[in-house]
Image 1 (cartoon, rainbow, N blue to C red):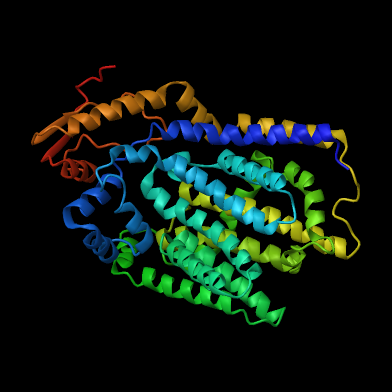
Image 2: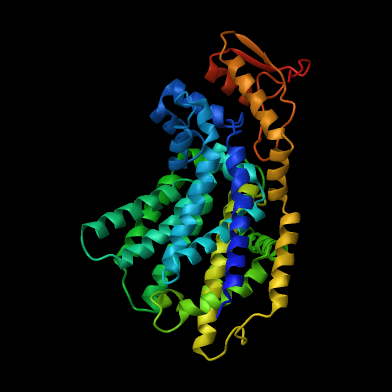
Length: 476
C-alpha cells in the first residue's frame, strides 16, 4: 500500500515535470512567426489561385498529401491573420496532450482520473524531453501539418476505436464509426510516415482478431478499407512521382530500405533507453500494469494478446515509421520523422510492458517478484530524471531561447519586418534578423533575390523583388 506522503510527493514531481515541458512551449508560442520555408509559398499560391486550385497544383505537381495540403493552404496567412501563428504551437502541444489523455483514459479507465492525468503528464514530458527538433514538432506549420497533426489524429483514433466497442448500439455508435473513418482519412492523407504505421497497425489488429480470436470485426474492416482507399488517393497523385524523381539517391529499393530501417531503429532505441528515464519509470509503472491485467479488470482483454507477437508487431511498426524515408528518399529519416517515431515508441513501450506483465502473471512468474520498491529504486529514478533533463537538447534549447531573450528579440524584429513588408513598393530591402532561436526558426529569405523563398514572400505581400541586404543593420 502506498504511503500518502510518497504519493503526494510523486504527484508534485510529475506535475513539475509536465510544467517543465509545457510552459516554455506556451511562452515561445507567443513569439512564433510564419517561416520563409514553405509557409509563404502555400499562402501565396492559395491567395493567388484560390484554395481548391492550390490543392490541384500540389496534388498534381508535388505531393499527394491531400489533407495536410488543405491545412497549409488554409493557414492564418491565407486569411490575412499574421498573428495566428502565435497560437499554433500552443494549440498543437495542447492537442497532443489531449490525444494522449484520451488514449490513456481508454486503456486505463479502471484507474482514477488523477492516475490517468499523471500518466499523460509524464508521457508528454518524456516526448518533449526526447524531441530531435522542437521547431519541426510545434512551430513550423509545414512540418506540423505533415507530421504532428497526423500523429495526434492517430493517437486519438485509437481512443475513439476503443470507445466505440463500449457504446451501446444506436445512432451514437454509427456516428462514432463515421468519425473514426474521417480520422483515418485525415491521418493517412497527411503524410506517408503515419500512413504506413496506421495501415499496418489496423491490419495487425484485424489479423489478430481473425486468426487468434476467430472474430470478423466489421468496424476494423471498415477502417482498414478507408485507410487503403485513402492511401490510394495519396499514392496515385501525379505529384508523388515528381517528388520521388527529384531525389537522385538510392530511393525505391525495398529490401535495403527495410534493413536500414531496422538498423536505424535499433540504434535509436538504444539511445532513447539511455538518454530518457523510460527504464526506471518502467519499474515504477509495473504495479499499475499489474492492476490493469488482474482478473476482473475491465481492460484486461486489451492486454491478452501473446507477448512475443505483440513485441514483434511493435518493432515492425516502428521500423515501418522509418521505412518511407529510406524507400522514398533514399536517406536516413529527418528529425521530424524521429519526433513521430519516439511518440509511438514511448506509448507502445508501456503498452507492450503491460502485456508482458500480464503474460508472466498468468503463468505464475512475476516480472518483478518484490511487492514494494526499495528506496534505491526511487533514488535511481530521480538521478536518471535529473540527468535526462540536463542533457536533453530540446529542453535546453527551449529554455535558452526563452530566458536568453533571443525569442523575444526574434519576435520583435520579425514583427518589424512584417510591418515593413506591408508598405507599398516594388523592391523591398530587408535587414537580416540579428538572432535565430532554433526552437522557433527554420529558414529565412536568401541574399539571392531569385530564391524560391524570396519569390513566395514577395508575391504574398505584392512586391516584385525582396532582398535580404546584409549591409543593413537591425535597430534595437
